[in-house]
Length: 586
Ligand code: ARG
Image 1 (spheres, protein in one colour):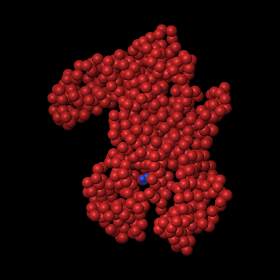
Image 2 (cartoon, protein in one colour):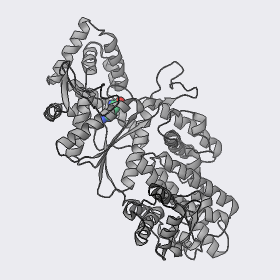
Image 3 (cartoon, protein in one colour):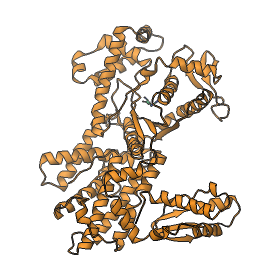
Image 4 (cartoon, protein in one colour):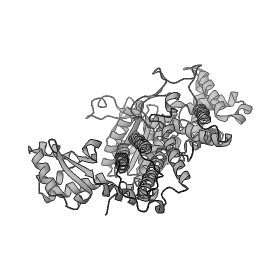
């Protein structure tokens, strides 16, 4: 029996063919919209008939009957097909088809191959984390890094060549002040022990020492001009600031499992902005207003009067100029089919204006148009709803936050599993602690504000990393007890189709993995995958309490071992896609 990987996508195609065979009105415009159904409606549901009928003043129920009548009869081997309500088409997988799916997709490589068709041959550039240099990363920098990495992995899993680009904020007026302060007050001792801490101190001091209108500010400006003109001493200092910053950031990235392909910050584009000004002027998209170069968008309710400022009146470039040059570089040099930028929602206007401008500019210059996505997220707040701060009111450094997570996880592991050696517990705590922080962020819709709660993220029940990692560890322990390797075909041979209600529920859930991947990667919202994994772990837990796995009957044992192995495979694959590391014991 042949079964495709993505059952929903396959049904979608089958219904489109049926619509053509039945020659319904406007068959080529028919979009079946097959999605994972709520369990009581079977496995998958097509609700596209309703919209298609409504737009053409047809009877939806009759239209559904016409389409179902023309479905390829071979589909009936795998599904019970029915029409419900005003014209929904429901599909319930037969047990033999469930078994066939579970038998077929039995390795990470096959899951990957199945999912990879969606974005095959595409190149996507993902711009995430992208902190400003000469400052430490604090808790506000967590979301972009964590969400961005999950998106990279989802895009890669769905077939894209992914270019991870850390667009550092490493250019701008602040460097004049920093050089000014560095030359006067650097503490070599402090620089040697914690360089980024020292730079941050100098940066603040430089800021305080250069109030508006002061001679110090003039001096800082001269430092900036020297840097911009390529004065070797200034450039060497600036380079040092970047190197030191990146080294500090890298420690955090290592802990989060992030490896960038490029760190092309704002400075990389400083010589590319002139071309942007020229092209925007030549294509008449930009105009000079009060000395500045600006782009209006007359069709937009706000941006028709509130322009996109692409060059300041004093001739200096700004965030918009470098971002325009960046879009050009990613399109021309990387040949990007898609560009994703991950920042908090406060930059929404900037990116809306940027993307509108890029669209018109690339049209006017006959360039290819990559898909542009600004992936936004809400703020990180404490449980009181206010910005998360330390007791003394400072911002929380990301390094300290991750350390605390690991410490708390260590206490949890020690309580749960006191018999493990200390070094084992430390290793587990690193994965559980960092995973808890990552997953707390990824488990909720990124558009919402994210309430940071140690107790919630470290809870062993609920939609948390410890719960999911524990489910993984528990399945490994079953295989250890059975003396078997998960996925070894010999322990699954002779498996019969799922029979008990819990086996069936679990098997059905497993077949929905491709649709969860599709949803999360199409919407660039990893929480859809998180929710799916949580539901899968719940179904597994019900199965595990209802049905003993290591029974004597070889057929039952084989199919239950298969269900365990497939749950494990999909949980591990899914958690890895979210950027988490998994464990074999916990
Ligand atoms: N450095 C910016 C910040 O800290 C984020 C940069 C995002 N990427 C971009 N191409 N603008 O807010």
